[in-house]
Image (tube, rainbow, N blue to C red):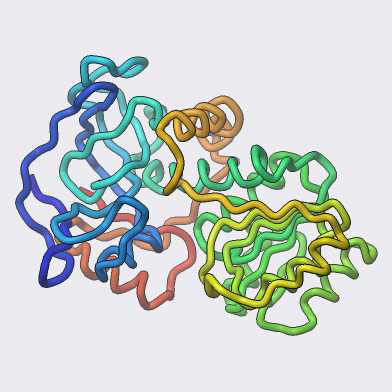
Length: 322
């Protein structure tokens, strides 16, 4: 089969053996896959947890049709239309654990479905499970114009957030955040953004920060969070090291939690998918939670898909179809 593989000369399409489903795995004929920032890093040889490196088929989320099941796979049969996440998604066939699948209705296209698994699971976990968002609370999403950021704002609104603040340093993208649930859009490069958030929350600060930027905004986030508020660190697009105001953190008694899929067990990941299926997947099926598709590329043109991502000119998801 064809797969997009990182080799000695970089990432390229190559012929590799078709995988076989073992244990609780299912084999999926991939029809569409979504690009993510971590994929871009892996095309340059960077590791992403256990993924990446020479000889590795790349990609982390996809949509397609089940063609075979391992002997211990349950709740799925050949012919089922599914979306999911896992390694080696950029290929004609991929395998995934039976517990990290989302069932697709007939009306949902594979292209649409391929935009959803990582955004839904990442942000439902960050907002609802870890962030403990309650109706009537306020949320700040740092890096809101990214695909997962757009989903975070929508989930926050769906779960009853009173005020949703989204940040983007790009004026054009910032102007579109309201389409995805933002009541207030801020430029996190503006030194006055913390004051803007405090003004919008009557001086208290937000209940919850979903931080995909960190770096230079780490201590600013602390000042923008209320006493007994929560900060969930999801990403570090702005840097993995920075000054941290421990005094403000302690004075406001803020819960600061880091999350990643890279160190989670398969049991933890299954639980996250189960919570998504039981809570917000119906809203995604109905179109209440949606991911804008920036552009689509054929598999043979996957190099240009990554070039568009590297140019950082997109809003929403870049999808590759097979």
